[in-house]
Every structure is written in structure tokens, then in C-alpha cells.
Image (cartoon, rainbow, N blue to C red; front, top):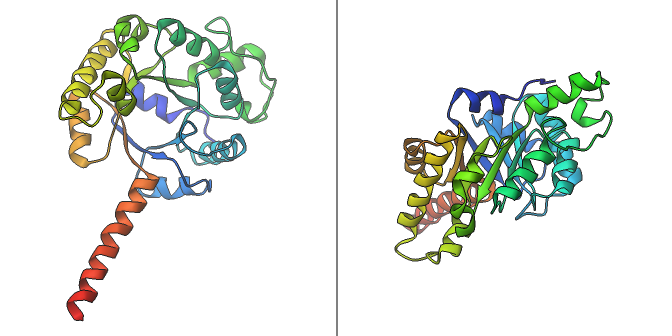
Length: 263
């Protein structure tokens, strides 16, 4: 059973990590497939998918057993969701819709025990591997292991970018490109790519200033190169749904063309 968080260790070293969104496949053993495919982590989306707490807890147990990092985006960055996920044994959070420094501070506080935060105590359970450690040892270990990324997805967030980026206890920053584009009024327009790149560059500069890692998502190999060039080290490549659809679409298209040529 893993005791250190490889996701956090790699992030602190500045190593590039490649993962993928998991939006549909709820079988925990899917994590084995992703690891076998060479990915560094899986990011489970609870904001835009039907994943339940029970499913995520099962997946988290297997992820720890395999020492394959699993990141979870909760539906909301409130104390209830953060507490439940951490106590279920999730080590890495990807928190959406953080618009203000106050929200960032609340997220950071909910993720760590005192004196660094205000995380609620739950005795021993999945979050301790059911091992009863001395309290001070447990809290220090948990505080050092958790990794917290926050998503900036609005003009309001970027108006307070520097203050949000400076928040202690926040480990990485990212944008939510589609929601941000919608809020900026450029979604689906020719100016969308340029506007998002400008905001990515602003975010990277703020992250560097305050010693935070940068996470970005993309759906192409060229996009991965671009995000790394910008300064991102945590890269989310595509998703289970997109990869399945594109893979089957490509194969079926080739099969139908071959059958048509024989007719």
C-alpha cells in the first residue's frame, strides 16, 4: 500500500505528468488499464458525471493499492465534499469554480488539519488505511500528503489572480477553459483560443511568482507540447469518453471504407 503521494512528489520536482479525465467508466479496475497504458494519473470528474461517493471510494482504495495517483474533481469546493473525499482516502483534489481569495482560503483550510487548516477529525478509516497512529503523526502526515489544485473559471477570479495564487495550502492552479471562455464572452468565437492563451499565460506567471504548480488540459499531442511550453507540468490529456469515441469512430470509418471498396 502506497504511503507517499507520487502525484505530489512529481509536482514538487517539476516533472511533467500526463493523465486523463474519467467521466464515464466507473469500474475501479479501469485504473489498471490507464496505468498499463502509461498514464501517470487519473482524474475522476464528479462535477459533470454520475460518479457516486461509493464508487469513488472504491476507486481510491484501488488507486492507493496500485500506487497510481487518482485526482478527484468534486461537484463543489465546499467543506462537505472536501471532507468526505479526503476521509474516503482521496489524496488529490481538483476544485472547481474558485472565484475569490476567500474561497481559496476556505478550500485550503478544509484540506488540512490544524494548525495549517480546519479539516475535521474522523478517527481512523480509509484515510489512515485503518491504522491508528498517534494524533500528531497522523495530522502531520496527512497535511504533507494532500495535493490541492484550484480552478479559475471566471473574470472575477482573474481580477484577484495574484491574491488567489498567493494562498497558502493551494498547491497548483489551472483554468476551466470552457467556463472561462463562456464568462469572457468568447466561447465558440474566432477569438477564443487567443483569449484563453492570454489567461493561461497570466496564470502561469502568477503561479511561478508564488511557487505553485500549473495544471492544464488538452486533447492533442501538439496541445500537450504547447501546455508544457507555457509552463504546465500537470497535463490532462483528453478523457475516457473522447478516447473511446475517437478510437471507435476511426476504426469503424476504416472498416466501412474497406467494405465499400470491396462491394
